[in-house]
Image (cartoon, rainbow, N blue to C red; front, side, top):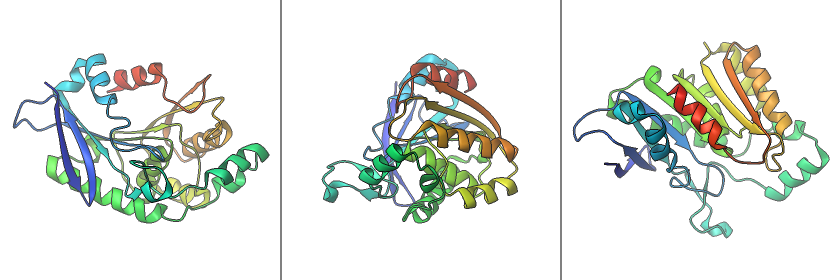
Length: 240
C-alpha cells in the first residue's frame, strides 16, 4: 500500500511517498523538485509509476517532493509555487531573439537563498532517514532541475545520481567554477528539441560544461517540447 504523508524539512512542506512496511527505513532517498508555477504534487505521480515499472524501487526507495518556498498566489497563480521569480515575458523575448547568453550567465534573484534552504532540507532528510549522499538521488523538472543542479554544484553534494529533466545552464560562471572543483557524479539529463520554454541549446551547454568538468552525463534528447516523456522515466526506472 502506498504510504502518503506530509512532512516539513527546513521549512519546506514535502509530500513523502513510499511502499515500505511501517517502521522499515528506506535504503535510498529520491528528492524531486517541481517547476515554476507547480507544487509538490505536480510530479508526485512519478513515485507510483516508478514503483510499478521497477518493483525493486518499492522495496528500498522513499520519494520526497518538496514545495518550493515562493507562493505565487499573490502574482495571480493560486496554488503555484516557485524556487525564484521568473519574468516569463522576458524569457519569451530571449527565446525569440535567441540571445541565450543572457539566460545562461544570469544568477537569478532568490536562487542562492532557495538553494541554501533546499540544501538544509535535504541534509535534514538524510539525517532523519539515516542516509547519505551515496544513497540519495536529486532530481527536478524545469526550474526544479536548475535548483537541483545548483544544489549539487554550489553545496558540493555528491549524490548517487543527478536527474536534470528539461533544465539548462544558468549561473555559468559560478556553475563552471563549482563543477571544476566537484568530484563529479552520474547525471541523467533529458531535453526536448522543440522546447519553447527553456530552449534546447542552453541544455546542450549544460551537458557540455558538466562533461568537460568530469561528470558522467547520459543525455537523452527527444522530439517534443517542455515535458518528460515516458521513455525517459522508463530509462530512469531501469537505473534505479
